[in-house]
Length: 163
Image 1: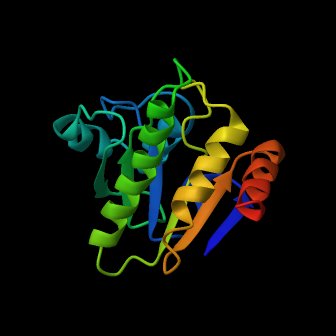
Image 2 (image 1 turned 60 degrees about the vertical axis):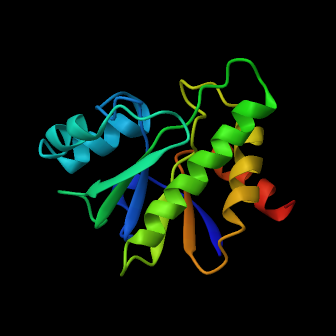
C-alpha cells in the first residue's frame, strides 16, 4: 500500500525514513540536511564510516533523535544525460531501500521523500512515475511518500493513480 501525504519527513512517526543521501552520506542540503539536523550530531560519525556509496545503493543506520527507528540512506543518480540507464538506476535506489527495509525485523512503515527531484535534477513527474512503478511491487509494505509541497503531492498521487 502506498500513501502520499504532505509534511516534513523528519516529523513522521514511522519505523523507517529514507534519506535522499549524497554519495558521501554526509549532511548536505535539502532533505538530507534536514534529516541530519533532526537526527543530531551522533549520525555524522556513523555515516562517515559507511560512505561513499554509488548511486542506486542504500545503507541503514539508527535514527538517533528522530521519531523513526531507522534511517535508510539511499543515493539517487543525477539526471544528467536523461537516459534509460539513469531511470533504471533510480529504480535501483528504491529497490535497494526496500531491501534494507525488509532486513529490519519489526519495521512495518517506511517513508520516502521525493527522491532525486532537488539538486539531482529529476523532473517531478518522471521521478514520481518511477517511484510508483517500483514501489507498487511491494504490496505488503506500508509505504508513505512524504511530499514537502502541494505540487509534489499532486505528482505522486497522479503517478500512483495512473500506474
